[in-house]
Image 1 (tube, rainbow, N blue to C red):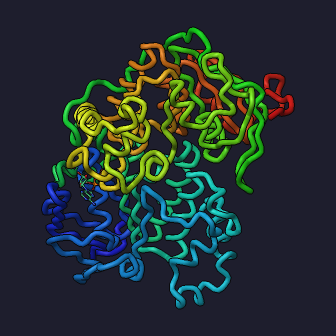
Image 2 (image 1 turned 60 degrees about the horizontal axis):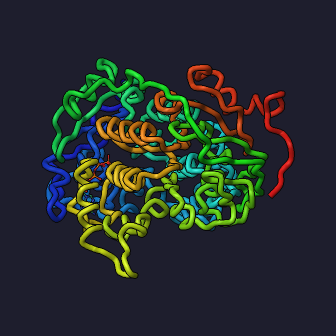
Image 3 (image 1 turned 60 degrees about the vertical axis):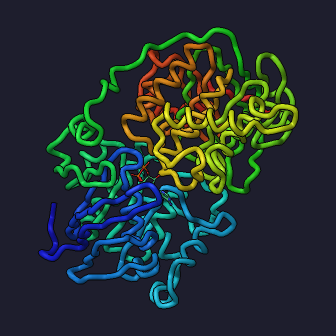
Length: 517
Ligand SMILES: Nc1ncnc2c1ncn2[C@@H]1O[C@H](COP(=O)(O)OP(=O)(O)OP(=O)(O)O)[C@@H](O)[C@H]1O
C-alpha cells in the first residue's frame, strides 16, 4: 500500500451504538490511512452497516470519537459527511426512479459544487469513460438494472471528488467482468490517495483488492489481518469459526417431468429502456436446478417478472405450470398453484419494509394461515419464529420490521419464507446476495433439499461460481435472448461467459423465430 501521508484519513475511537435489545457496535476502533483499501468483514448482523452508517452521518453513535484528517469531527448528517469528502454506496440504493441519472446526481450536489462542475452531463460522461463505468447521464433510473444503478451510485460519489469512499457489498450484483472493472476503479482511486472502506462477504475479492481488513463479530472487533497474506478459508475462520468445506461441489441431478414450460415467449419491454424478451423457450423439470447467467439488464428481470406474474400482461399460452396455462393468471393465483418467488430487490419487492416479519410471512403464505376469512395470527407467529430459528436470522423477534434487519438477514428471511412453502416451482434471483459464508451454505443446502424433494428451481444469478456450484443445467441471457440450455457438466465458465456476451445469438443454436404473445 502506498501511504500518502503520515496523518490518518479516518480514525474511529471506541464507537458504540445500542439499538433496543441489540448492541450493534461495541467500542469499535479502526484507523484508515489515505489510499488504503480496507475491508470490513463479519457475519450477517455483526455490525458492519451500522458502523459505516455512523461514518456517513446516517446513524448517531451513543459513544466514541471520529477523527478526520487529524481533527475531531461530529458527522451529524450525510451532507456533513459529503462536505468532508466522504461518499457512500449503500446496499439498498437511494435513487429516484423517475429521474434521470444526471438529475439524481445533481440532487446531492450543492450549488457551489454544481457551479464548479459546470456541465454535469459532460462530467459524468468523462468520468464514465475514465473509470469504465458506462453510465449514460440521460437515462431514466427506472430503466436501469441493479448493476447499472450501482454504477450510478458510484458515479455520484466520483463527481464529488471523494477522499473516502464507502462501499457496502459493492460486488454482490456485478458480473465477473464488472467486478474486475470496479476493482480497477478502486485501485485508481487508491493511487490518487482516496481511502476505501469496503464491506464484502466475497472473501477471495477481499484477498485480491484490500490492503487491510478488520473482522467484526457481535458488534466487536475480533481480529485484523492483511488479506493478501491470508486465504479466503483462513479469513472465514476468523469470521465465523470452523466451517464445513463449502466448495467441495454438490452432486448434479437429472430432472424428471416438465413442471414449468416457457414457449415462444416474446414480450416488448414495459420500460422505455428495458429489455424485450425474444422468443424464449425452455422447460424447467422437477428435481432440477436450472441456472440462468447473464450481465444485469439483459432481460433477467423481465423474464422473472413475467413468469412470477409480477408483470401482469397476459401472455396466453407462453407459460404453463404442470401442463396448465398460467400466462393469464395473476401472481397470487400462480402462488396457489405452487409457485414461489424471490425477486432481485429484497426490500420493497421481496418484503414490505414497514411490516413485521410475521406480516411479511402472511403476504406470501396467506393460503395456510387464513381460515374462514380470519387470519390465524398465533400460527403465523409460531411459523415465523421457527423460520427465524432455522435460518439463524438475527433480529429481535417475529415482530421486528423488515427494514430493521441487516441485508443478509433479510435475504435469509425471504429465502426461508419461500422455501418453507414447499413450492413445486421456485423462481429465485441471487439467493445468497449479501449473505455471509455460513448462511450461504445453509441456503445452498435448503435449495438442494428442495430440489431433491422434487421441486423445480430456476436460479437467476450473476454469480457464475454459485451457478456452477448449484445448477444441474445452465443457460445464459443476452439482450433478451436465451442461449441453449445444457447440462452443467457439459459446459464451462468460458462458454457461459461467451453466451453472456451474446455469441450464440446468430448461431444455428439460437432461438431466433419471432414472437407471439
Ligand atoms: N434500525 C434498527 N433497529 C433495530 N436494530 C437494528 C437496526 N439496524 C440494525 N439493527 C441490528 O443491529 C445489528 C447489526 O446490524 P448491521 O446492519 O450493522 O449488520 P451487518 O454486519 O451490516 O449485517 P449484514 O452483513 O447482514 O448486512 C443487527 O442485529 C440488526 O438487526
